[in-house]
Image (cartoon, rainbow, N blue to C red):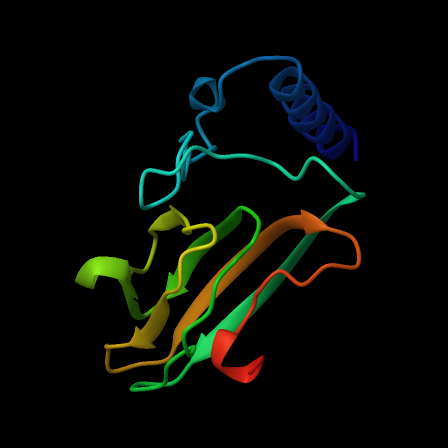
Length: 144
C-alpha cells in the first residue's frame, strides 16, 4: 500500500512539474508526438478570437478504400494515427501519407479528402480546437 502511494505521488509530482514549464522530453515515459507552430500546409496556427473556446475529440475509423469526403476545418485540428494508413489530398495535388504513430496539425480552411489506402482499418484520434456552437468540419458538397 505504501509503495503504491509513493509511486502515485512521484507520478503526480512529475505531472505537476510538467504543467509548470518542464519540457516533456525531461520525462522518460513521455513520448512527444507533435511540436509545431504551423499546419501540414505551413499555415500559422491561430486560435478562434470570437466565441467560447471548445475542444472536442473523437476516434474516426475508415475501412480500406473508404474516404472522408472533401471537407474543411475552420479551426485548428490535430490528428494522431492510432492504426492503419491514411492518404490525404490537399489543394494543388499535394498528397500526404500518414501511418500509425504519426501526428499532424491538419490544414485550416483548405478543402481536403482523406482515404484509407491501407489494407486494414485506419483509426485516427482527432482533436478539434474550435468554438462552442460552431461546426468543426464542413462538407461543401453537402451544403449546396
